[in-house]
Length: 291
Image 1: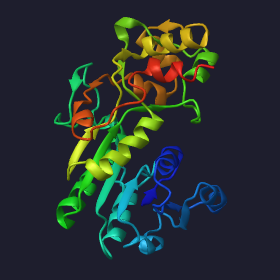
Image 2: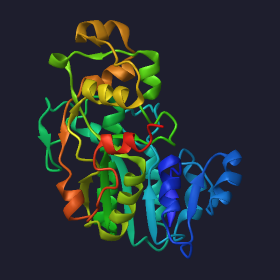
Image 3: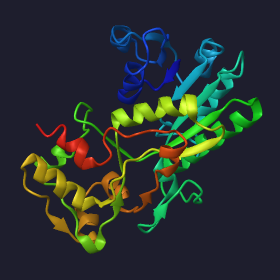
């Protein structure tokens, strides 16, 4: 197996694999080599922003998990040249038996709190969401052109206690406000361990050129999510503010998440990938780590 973008989730994927399976990971950071080797992973030095360094990836693996994000700055701001460079390298020699790409639920844009399944049209509102749409299109084109089963996972907010910034505790301690109920948005979540398991399920059980939402069963407004976490951690609940006030107080990145509301349907994940969640709700996941 080859993992592209072997950060927190990629390492969790590797930990869930049987020892007999050789795991390779691309890295552009020499300082990460010892940590990857310690995790039982064979590191391959290369850079998605330097396509010539990717030629060695061709024909190395029978399964590929692609979790690397698009570049944040690119002259063609709607494109993901990293995914394009990777797919070109994979075509140079024997093709993998399956490819999984980790995308984002942000490709839908604001859905006004509606229930959303995988057939809904895309309306990306941000540059990073546009880049993900471009990456998805490249992955599906690669799958069709090469007859390689390619599966796309659309992923919402990832959390876990042992993940950097992986719980709401930091924001609660800062007292960062959330929106009042009448202005609030629905938010979706997945525990990092369940996401890693979904990657593996998609590699072996995902339908070719198919898309699956990877999210838990929680359907909470963002403010209610932070209230739940505050109660579990025995911390003060965050202050509630009007959207007009939030626009003046909060950073743009945070405001972008507060500007989109949707409730992801996860039935395809459960029925087609046959994934049983270890943490079916954020209450289950946060309760397990509240200490």
